[in-house]
Image 1 (cartoon, rainbow, N blue to C red):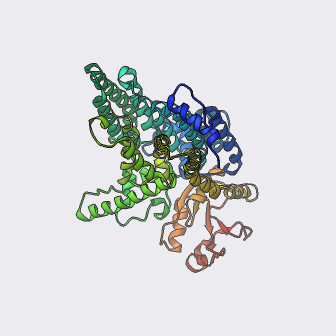
Image 2: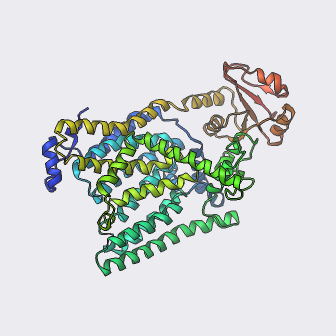
Length: 546
């Protein structure tokens, strides 16, 4: 692959001009990156039209509650509100909810690319390398959009704007910089609750670095002022929401997600309660399932410091989580750790007073602070997307320095650039290929069940959770979850009746084998099986009579 023709010539910079001459730079800028982004998004949209995730249903349902005026039930300590708030105007247009949330995420992806371009200027990345990064970023951002449709990308977008103001060389020149970073920190918290502890650690650390870099007493005073103003702005914005959800849960609450995560991590647990503890009523009359507020599933809290065994368990989990973070970084690019090591070696050594004043610390420290929190709680790749972008930026800065060497002839530059770009593309394209047409079969099944069997109401399933939840969403019904693990046939029947279930879904085991029903749950045959074997993989029992 030849990426040398994708640069943009910039005469104002001596460094950029030199690279432009060596690499025969032609026009490639933000507009072309955005065009590539939208073309890829449009081409791939039919293949991800029905892509679902349980959280997506919850965010849609929360937005609908706000629109219906049910604000109290919409208050949620597990799912942050900003994503649902932004979704509301699109729902008002009459767009199907799943289309609306994908369109919202596409616009968030677009603004993430724009903010990345602006931030690279603040990091003083030269234009030729910026354009390579923008080229690399377009397909990566499309993957972020279609992978989950959760607010993880929204958090990436907000944090990029937050970094944009906080990383400024001129940060100490205006009080407004402190105010804006505080506001953006509050918006980040309202986007994903993890941003709350991140801001409280990250904002002081970067301000300390700015203070250390300041040359005059006035600049140092302005940094202190910016820190205080930013902290006040963040406290007010986040405090209003904390007060609201604390009143709902009758206790001081920043988020309930941490408590839930620790509940499912404690020794002896089998994971999410919805997968094995039996049927759960939806959280309210307007809810689709109990997953709209998982914190209500918590039966007790786990303290990892309670005993020696609990501490050992937490250490074991932290080691496992560290490996997951490492694996995520390698998925972003197999050069990730080479980039980080090279970046540290080139820009931040030897460690002395001068090196500590370099702004190159900002992205590296931000990455480390953000990732370190997931050593304590369960990390998922999408939680670390902001680090992927920071690694991409730092990789570009490493390339800038490497290309100053006479060793890198134009031909060698082309080879290295090709490997650099491809390393960030491999995982996104692999995942997009694997997940194409995801949940399309579920949507098609929902249409058959609606149009041929005319079913709706309260659903439950024997063992699966996600698939019947998606069915319930497509069919505008409620889902009560999976049957209690290890229950007898008689207990299952009683649970179905007690929870007012209309239809009970049982998927066959490998080979469409349903013999386990005959052997362990013959009591189910008290109810009508409405498909009559016409759907080979599924049996549906009608629990309630007309």
